[in-house]
Image (cartoon, rainbow, N blue to C red; front, side):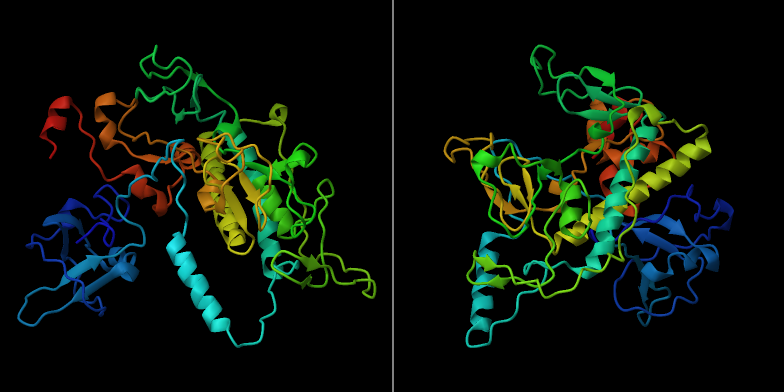
Length: 452
């Protein structure tokens, strides 16, 4: 069976693993995947993965923890039935591909499929009355996403404040010549530096400790739009339009009201004449707008002078739990808002624009930008464009320093997750695939040569 559909259970040192005295000496059973059935009568059975014993259930309490992910099949004439462990996340996954500066980012949905879907949509709409435009394309807000926007806004501030405090307890190293970082007291020995005069240092990093939260949670900025459906920002107005964090701009367009960044709120849907031409409806006959019942107080980012380090290990673990929860809230909230509010990204550079169409500022400096006169190649964005995970090398608990010869055995994780893991937080299952927690690390070079 492939690793994408099955996952190993915890090792004997895990909380659910039974003691060696409770294990039954029965022959391992073969794994099958058929239909679901009651799990009674299978306590004490061994489960196998690639003909090796991975776990043993000694009592009903241990099996109940895995009951939702177990299925078995009984075949007549067999003395014992097989069982399969299913998981929503693969056991081992590859890291996202790194594209060089000369490569263009791939479209989230291939162009061929987009054209096919457009033709089918036009074919279905032929001869039928025109469907009214739904929000937010008609200028109105999606009411159900306003609480999500406020939650995302406060989760972003909480994440930044917690990272500033964690940086005083968990050491983070940053290279002086490139943008690579490493979570740990000693930087990794891998020769991957591409900064200034890296050829003189043979690619070796020059590490120094950093206390900046921007090195962990990468800030992505974009232009602030007063009118989301208004005309595109021309090139000569690029310095007069304020730049704000992209997550903040996404929350503003989704319904967050900030006095420093005003935006146009419509109470009646716009009248769309053509594909790019709209007319605002008359709102003079309407009464005064009611106060926003979804509005909640917005948190503020702590100055560096007011940041206090955690005083104990228990406080550090609790802070790490809150940080990983804020990180998941930011990722989930941004993903939900991006399904309704369009976010564009340049296919050649990291420039992001929150709005239905990209701006016209000719400030793209990526590969062969002269052929495009500095214009961006706008395309649909993905979550990692708005909230970059920034993968770093994972430090296993059994080692104090990474070794260059064992690079292929180490995994990676987002910098926020790695910081929280070293602070004592429980790592979510979705990140365990890239961290390679179930991969044994050799203790010597002699063991490396024995690995197949």
